[in-house]
Image (cartoon, rainbow, N blue to C red; front, side, top):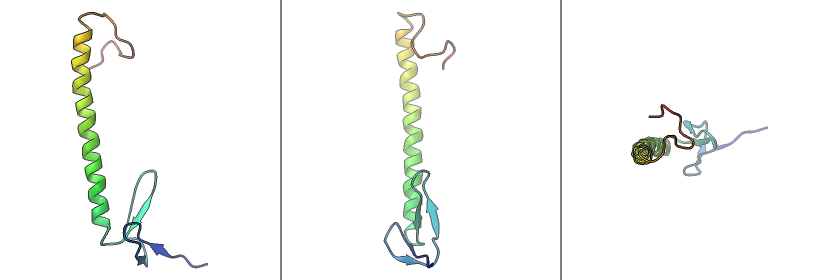
Length: 81
């Protein structure tokens, strides 16, 4: 049985995938498309980290505001930071 590889970026035939990316949906890319796909992954990771930090900051502000009125908050551990 023959195996054919096609780049998930441009659809070009490949002898062997140059790069494979993805956690859930693995994709294979040629040497031309690989750097763009890698850059996309890097930007998504940077965005995820920034959103997590923003969430932590805003949650802390909310905690401070509501702990003025309520001793214990729902779904928050006593020593949550």
